Image 1 (cartoon, rainbow, N blue to C red):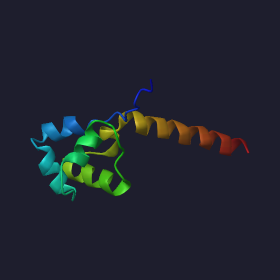
Image 2: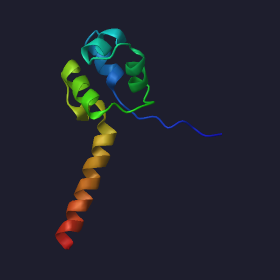
Image 3: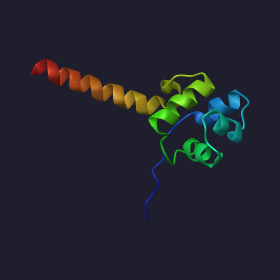
Image 4: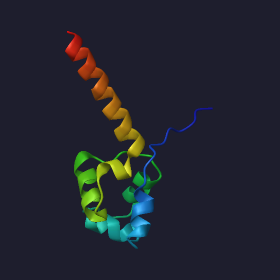
Length: 88
């Protein structure tokens, strides 16, 4: 049995803090239906870069707030690569 991997995010948290329904957030980011927002919130799919920027604009937050673990992982990866670059 395979476990479905989900992408941890805080979209639901910030949407509800803003008092927005999924339908309203979908409208703000240019989606015709709330189903894609639901998939983002459940971590089933990662938003495209464009949708991610729109989410941040609609919720008045930074990417780090929506995807803290992912951003931390990417930052650590870049720092490791910087160290490797300095050694070469």
